[in-house]
Every structure is written in C-alpha cells, then in structure tokens.
Length: 564
Ligand code: ADP
Image 1 (cartoon, rainbow, N blue to C red):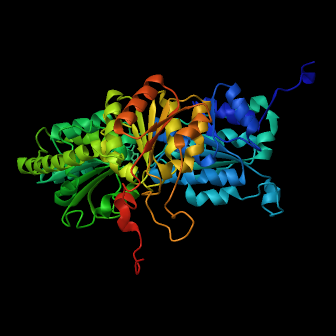
Image 2 (image 1 turned 45 degrees about the horizontal axis):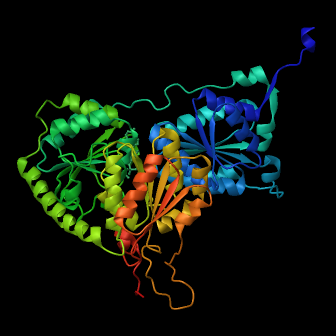
Image 3 (image 1 turned 45 degrees about the vertical axis):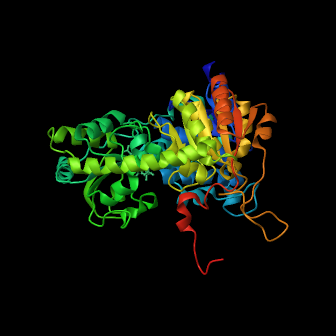
C-alpha cells in the first residue's frame, strides 16, 4: 500500500545546492575539505561551475570581484576553522570595499565547540566572523538552509553591499529530512536590492548648490561603477558640462580621454573646486579626508550614497543625496532645467591649461622611459597601454605599490567596470583571485598587472588559472623587491625588501606559457601573442631594481619617529 512506499528524502548538502540554484547562483569559488567536499561535487554535478583554489583568501577575493562585476553576491565556499579564517580576510576586504559576497563555511560540532572540548578544527566561527562582516548567520536545522541562504543573499546586496558570513555545521549538511518538506523550505528573495529614490527637496538643494558654483567638480567612485547606472551618470555629466575625476575603479565609466575628465589636472581640481559632488565615493584617506591643503577649506560637498550614515563621516555634507546612484542621477537631470547647472569658462580654462602642462611634463618622462635600459616601470607600462588599446574588451587587474600607482595613470580605460584593483584598504593579494573571477564571470580576456611582491600573495593561483585554462595574462613587474630591489643589507641575509624569482619559469610547471621580457618591445610582443592565443600566460617583466619609490605614493604614511 501507499504507506509502505519509502518517503523521498533529501539532506543538507542537497538543500544548499538546490537553494543556490533556485537563487540563480552560477559560480562557486572555494577550497574543498571536511565537511564541504561532497557539496562541491554535487554542485558541479548539478550544473553550477565550481572553481577550486589553492588558498581560501584567493577564492574569497574572487567571490568579491564577482559581486562587484555582476551586482549579485559572489559565493565563497570554505572548510572550518583555518580555511574559514583564510577566507575571512577576503570577506572583510569585500565589506570594506562595499562588494556583495557570501562566505559559506562548514563548521564543527556545536556541542563540542561550545563546551570547548577540543573538536577537529574547533572554532566559534560565527562569533569570529561578526566583526569582519556586514552580517553573520548560522543555520542549525536543515529546514532553515533555504532561509539562511535567502537571508544571506539579500543582506549582502541590499543597501550598501558587503560580505555576509553563513555558517553551516557539518551535522546540518548531513541532516536527512523529507524531500518535499525540504523543497518547500527554499525561496528566492524578491527584489533584494530595491531602488532607493532621493527626496525631491534633497535633489533641489543639491541643484541649487551646483548651479551657484564657480568651480564645480564631480568625483566618481567605485560605488558609481558598481551601481551599473552608466547612462544616467554620463547624461548628467555631459548635459551640465561639469568636470569629473574618476577614482581608480570608476575609470572607464566615461572613457578616460573624455574632454571633461580632470584626471590630468587632479591636484589642481581638488584644491580649487568650490562645490564637489561625490558619487559613490567616500571622503576617506584616498581623498585626503576632504581636508586642506589638498582641498579648499571652503569647499562645499554634495554626496550621493546609498548609505545615509556615510554623510558627515569626514566633512560637513551640505547636500546629502541618499539613494541609489541611478535614481539620484536621473532625478538630478529631471529636476534641473536645461542650462541651470553650467560651468564658468574660467574654470574650464584653468583646468585645461594645467592639463596641457601636465601632459607635456609626462610626455618627456614617458619618452625617457621608452628607451631606458634596464627597463623602467614607465617603459613597460607604455607597451602594456598600447596593446590594451588594441584589445579594449580586456579586463585589467592591478596591484603593487609602484605598479599600482603608475599603471593607474598610465593606462586609460574605455569601458566601465573593467578595472579592479587594491581598493579601499590598498591591500595586496587580490590579484589572482580578482583575475580568475573576471575571466569566469565575463568570459573576456584578463590582464593582471602585478608588482613582484603583490604577486607573491596569490601567485600559487597561477596553477588554478592553468587548470581551468582561463585567458589570464599576468605581467609581473619584477624589480626584485618590495618597492625596489636595491635595498642594502647589513648582514648576510637579504634586505627586508629584497625578492628574487623567475616567475616565467613558475607558470611553465603548471602547463602555462612563460615569457621573460627585458625591453618594452618584448613586453608588447609577448602580451600581444598571449592575448591573441587566449592562453594562461605569465610575462616576467625585468625592471631596473633601482626604479620605484618606497611605498609608492603613500610614503608619508610610514611612521617617522627619530628616523633611522
Ligand atoms: P572609491 O574608493 O572609488 O572612492 P568608495 O568605496 O570609497 O569608492 O565608495 C563607494 C560608496 O558607494 C560607498 O559609500 C557605498 O555605500 C556607495 N554605494 C555602493 N553602491 C551604491 C549604489 N548602488 N548607489 C549609491 N551608492 C552606492
């Protein structure tokens, strides 16, 4: 009879995979081990793409970059205690950068962990994650897996995006429940990141301020890039004629050669602007906290941000515009009559004159670097710039001290969200994780421009790139050291800043293609060939060890004391 037919069953692992699928998740970034190995296997069988890394922080950085690129939380999967902690670096970095991601970690038995009885990989992961994440949740029953995943995905994407931790103990992954009950427990959040319209009075206040400005300036940040509101941003900027500065990850929202870009007159623009509109950009250390002398002490700020509490964090915000970038920019364009906001020609001319001066200065420097032997950063970068201009769909990942500072200005971007870099923390170690996610999520070729020190933090993922045959070309700017390679040591040991490696040999061990380049022409030839072939490749670019400055452009952040 019917009572004898076995009830179909499911378990925690199946429910996690079913919930991710129901929520449209396509890619998982992780490192397997107890208790999540079967979870990764099942996910792959069920049509999700699982990318297996060599270290959890790289998998986490990949999930974060996926979140930035797609506006949907990227998913990182880790084992318990140490694997979880490795991933936490990326979760914290994602939260700092306002990128949506969810770190799902398996964890050990609650009844052992909570009495500190010394379990395998014992750790109270929920408590450990909380200070580093936007939110942290734990699932205690298989029937709550769907709820936990829906909640984690919504929290990561809603309002100011960030990293969410979801703890699933091994016992819950193995828990067996009725399949029908399990299926009914899953859901997909409706409209997880709703538009947030600004108050009309707030829009009019901002328009008044901008209309009365003598030297207005717009600063575009990576929140503006993330918002995927490219058309309304461009429309507002072009119809008003206001000059703008892109922060590094906002480059390409409007092409860097746009006539209204003030990037080549940056310090003058900051010092002289009287009304500044920040769009998805925080007034943090990257913008000198809005303080004099970098900024005019009389500058008035308009700030567009989805996080109301961001206002006044550094300077008084005369016109706060709380809302999503797209809605705010549309409202500004709608509510300002044509011609209401315009830019006095004196300001445009002042910026243009400085741009011309700076471009001429830079041209001399570039010309000298082009022929310098041994090769300089700026020599290699010009070669990269030229090849990337021929391949404008390429994604660019960039980290290092000098490699980051110099590439940011030397390499123009023409498409939005095509540049990923060290971000708000100025962190090193995002390189290979970001590059892998860019290749996986977009299917386009990726170029990773890495300082030799920065590369070391995630270098082993070159094996991952080769294993999945991703079209990632890594250029290591190898000046044999952190900052520089000519540091002297008073002992038989190398200097604290010294490094030594043939990175091109390393990728060959994994089946990738290695190149060693000692001139800009060799850099260009290797990059052209590798991009055309769409193969995993690494170009070790040999840079003069004496080229580069300590800490790049942020040497002033080193403590001084009595000196040494
Ligand atoms: P940058 O480093 O490029 O200057 P930040 O990371 O400092 O940029 O600033 C990004 C800001 O963008 C954050 O304050 C965040 O709250 C905001 N933000 C993120 N997404 C949106 C969005 N869709 N609409 C409005 N603001 C957003």
